[in-house]
Length: 284
Image 1 (cartoon, helix red, strand yellow):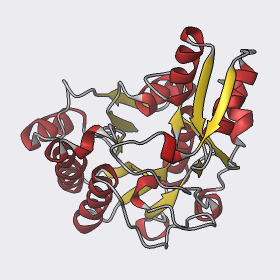
Image 2 (cartoon, rainbow, N blue to C red):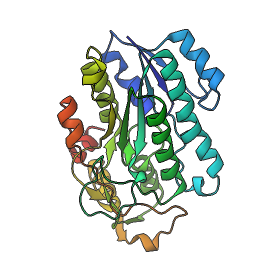
Image 3 (cartoon, rainbow, N blue to C red):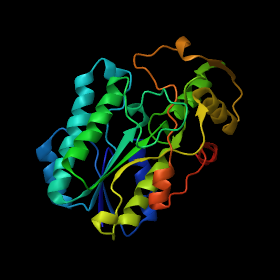
Image 4 (tube, one colour):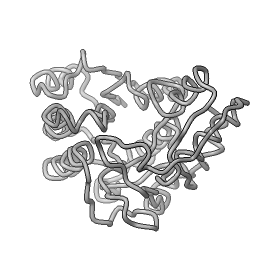
């Protein structure tokens, strides 16, 4: 079985590389943007022609949430056109597509966890382009799994955890917002779930594979302040940490005030066991 991974140098891409040795029966093909350019249909075709993957995991994306507000064309090029291109090639090669999306497709006005059936309503360019990418895939190729996730962090790449650790080495005091509620997601846990979905469904008939859209994050919920506090506790760092409201930390893109994701569907469909965010953080 051949699994082609786009965005190999990102957090989830590196997490997939990290766990790949645990699956010796799978041939992984890891492609960064130099090898596979989502905006170039011919390039994607030639890569697929070379490796003929059974599955493609698309973790390549434009994820600069605030920067997207000032360069929407660039975000659209990767998150929408790129997803569309990949879906078209996956259809041509009959490759099952697993595509990562985001909690930013929701506006954050709910007070209970978002399900896959809740109506998306993005409030910024990043969320809108990710939603449009989802819709492009759904229109083109039915053999897909779209996985919406939130607050991704890991030992790889750039993320909130690593930013907090860097800032703690430079400052005695930090202020972090405490009125945005969500769930941190360990990228390695997400990578494991992607492989589990593939292994659970590879020998099933298409009608029983449960293609569609799913939520995945770790269990529990917290604010960014709570997350930062736990990061420092785990690393035995003493720092003056101050909770502040979102209004005291303005950003170009509006963040969802509440984006906890309901994982009932993915648990029932694939037997996924979800770790609590504190447990996964301690492991990292």
